[in-house]
Length: 340
Image 1 (cartoon, one colour):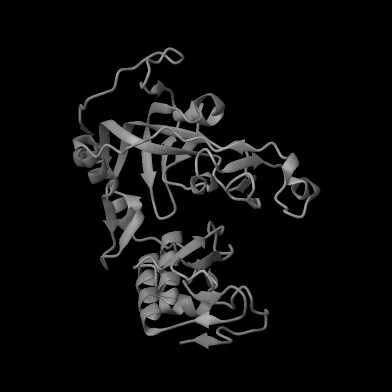
Image 2 (cartoon, one colour; image 1 turned 135 degrees about the vertical axis):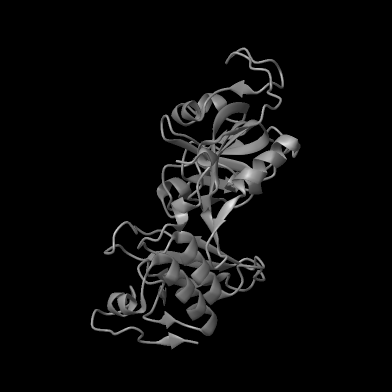
């Protein structure tokens, strides 16, 4: 390994006072670790905490992680509580996700609580933060100039300060006020971190050869995301949001990436669901997630060729590897139906 790769850029920055846990002064952050937050989250709920951890970011998430225990806390994730007005909106954790259940039919019996105003957090974008962004935003670019958002050029560790939220259960019934009709929200994060400030930034370079060395691989999640964005057309301006992208792509025999496209700027009386899409991780072929339909267009084909060059898939191998989509019958030959 070259000296440049081993080099560590250490920036000695202002560090907040370190109180002993349980004896923190007013307005001082509680000292902890990501491991402790994940292991015993209740005592830290709603408090300003401080810990030291590595920051990671890619297409799907931004998190602080601690390799000592494998713990991870996400940043910038929303929760249904964010839509409720403090002092008026109400919530009740529930064991079931079915609004037709006996529990929900007698919703007045649920243990309703009023949303409390959280501790305010304002991001301090000082010199420390700017230095932090410089390193975490540095990502590898392919020879075709495409950005690899999951390919950091530095491993960045910081001392982070911010508010920790813990939500206790996956399912929660909510209502805008005591007289409003309730509904059940699902898929919420159990915990999250809202960043206030960073200090003591340490950035260790990652050699670009880690990503650029030729090797046969599957299409990545972010590449699959880009392919679906071409089909739906609105990711760049924010009018389309993709959710999902779950698949086991660890082997050539794995499944498909699955996406749902949502129209974020749809009028209230218009269906915001643009459809479901499946991406073959071996070839980059994009399929309709409801019927046997393979998508193609000049722009899509251009990006598919670029991605296949990155993944080392030759034209001959592609012809041998391609197969019908997930909604097609085994005897169907791809494509059964083509969208222009």
